[in-house]
Amino acid sequence: MLNNLDKKTFDAFRDLVYDKAGIALGEKKEALVAARLSKRMHSLDIPTYEEYYEYVNNDTDGLEIIKLLDSISTNVTHFFREQQHFDFIANHIDKWYLGGQRKFRIWSAGCSSGEEPYTIAMTINETLRGKASDTRILATDLSTKILTEATEGIYNERDLEKIPDNYRRTYFEQIKVDNKVQYQIKSNCRSLITFQRLNLTDTPFPMKGPFDFIFCRNVMIYFDNTMRKRLLEEYHRLLKPGGFLLVGHAESLTGMLTGLKSVKPSIYEKQ
Image (cartoon, rainbow, N blue to C red; front, side, top):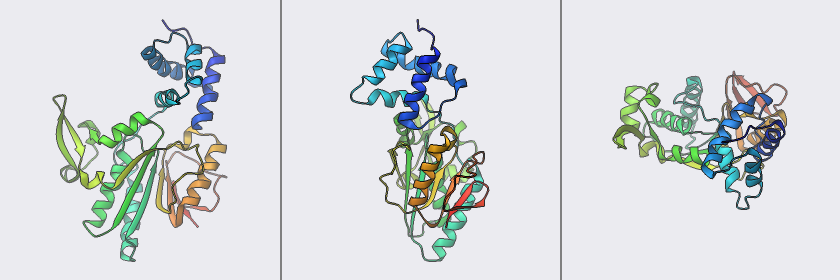
């Protein structure tokens, strides 16, 4: 039976998670952290949180910290979340294409289980409708577990509730997994996306850019202002002039923007 997570050990985990992932865990997250770590501890047959903390710190290959961060990370998303963002990129891609642009680069930072980058891919396919283009979407996340799910692109009926029937027919194929009906993204979307693990605290990022759009929605809410400013500096560096950063509608970037101008709620343009 596991012992209780005391404040000293909880604070030690908080410091570790912040140092490794930039995630600022509030003091009220103690019960959540205890519950999520306990599952990992059970699989390792480690009875106390103190012993698990030592186990993580003494793990020389660095794999256990990834497992810990997988446990801590929250992944909540769905297809066409905040629809106006996808309408916005469709309008701009259409306009840029008419202006002669053929190369499009988009980054989904914190892609979770893949719904966001796949929605971007569907949106671009519908906008261009077979017109010749060089389109690539980079999809990154901290969690190796969730990236495996995203790469497979397999979803259940409930996940597809917000997707129009014509999109289902065009972009999903029905398959069976363990005798259950599931739906997998077709190659006409999957071929546009590269999934990759990226820790957003590891700045500067290795990508060269420039990106037309960077999606970082409901990710920076887990970071403190110091980390947010670092991220915004990197996003500004990697966006093309006239490119756009899209964040969650509940996120406030007041006082942290440098060279990014608000053009719509939750949408910022590089000047």
